[in-house]
Each structure stands twice: as C-alpha cells, then as structure tokens.
Length: 294
Image (cartoon, rainbow, N blue to C red; front, side, top):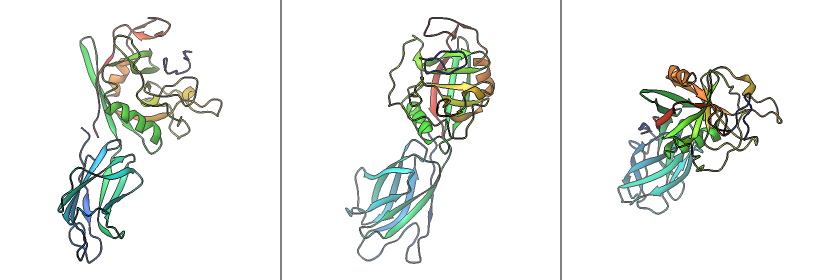
C-alpha cells in the first residue's frame, strides 16, 4: 500500500421519511389517480422511506389492484421497481432502490400502459452523522454527500454506512492538520474485510480536495477504493486529479456540521505504531456510531 507523506493510500490516506403529494392526471381521474370501466383504479399513492441509498416503498390505494399486470413505472433513479408483500384488491405495495437525488416521479400503469396515477417526491442530498470519542472526550460531525457529482462513490459509501460497517472503526491515520483517515480498522487494529467490490475512480468530477471535504482512500490502482475515506483538514490540491497518470482521489461530499470536531481529530498526538500504522493516534479516535440521517 502507498504510504508516502504526500499521498493518500488506502492503508495510509433512520433516514427521514418523505411523503410525496399526488398530482391530478387528466379530467377523467379523481384524487391521486384514475382508471375506468372494469379495470383497476388508483385513488391514492403514498411514498415512504424516500432517501438516497434506501429502498423506498410506494403504497397504492384504489380498486382492482390485484390485477397481475399492474406495474410501477419510475424514473431512472428508482432502480428495480417491483411489487412487494401481499396484494389486495384495494391496496398494493411496490418498492424500488433510490439511487439519485432531486425530483422523482412514480407512475402506476395498467396492462395497456395507461397511467392510473402518479406521485412526485423530492429526494434530498444524503447526510451521514458521525459520533466519535477519544478517552473521556466525545463529539459529532455531519457530512453531506454529492451523488450528482460522484454517484458511484456516494452510493458505495452509503451502502457501507447502512450496513453498520463504520461503527466501531477508528481514525487510524492522522497527518496533523492535514488529513484524518479511517473507516476499515477496529480498535484491535484488525482490518475489516470489505463488503463490496472496489469502485471506479470518480476524481474527474469537478470536486476538489478542499478543507472540510471527504474523499475516498485507495491503493496505487485508481479503481481500488472500497471502504476507507479521509477528511481534508486543509486544502490539499496535491490530491486532485491532474491526468490519467496522476488521477488523484475522488471527493464525494463535505462536512456541513461539526468541522471543529474534525479539526480536533486532526490535532491529536500520533505515533509510529508499526509499518502499517505510521501515524496512529496515541489514544484511539473511535467512531461510536455512523448513521444516515437523511
């Protein structure tokens, strides 16, 4: 793994619920939907668990909803839409994986493709809260991710967060007043196995390694990032992409609350614990809880 002082190497450097409002679809439809004849009708649509990286549930009310060809038609950011759970004639549920932010439109269609009703929801930029402690001291900070600029990196990070992977890990590499890196070692200094495959590098996304930003650590291979991340304590232009041969590191968000806590992490005493931990805090800086808050 890369450990030079000027480079960042991988071993070196409940979501809020949104209820969408229904929209009228033509004069023949009432309330949140419509239909006609003996076919299915939709009277109301309700979306819950609307958050980036989460599985959203759409609850449909109406009649004839046990029709086998009734389908959820969703924008591209709503992946793998499917019927879920028990289906009744007056109520049905559908799910999809939310992998985008902003306005998201969901439509119910019958077997002929006729739109029976629609709902539009707003998916906010995701935020992740970190609770940290060191001996008797504790604090918290929040980062906001940017899935528009870094969709692959932000989704990968949220998956690790929602799997509970980061809770109980430490900031294992602190370059005083430069970066604080962590995300894959426990307090026993054992490396946690990555849960997902390495991701493609998104360093050419317009985001820079400025003070307060969060970025992915990696090895010398560009497409090798998994779980480890670092936070820039100062502007670090040397970590930005220059070219294909100097690809830099992918920034995917920024600290929006508690930057002073991050600064405190960046000023803790460090020591050379081993070749694997050349800049380890003397006392563990532990992530006691890492959760998605929206």
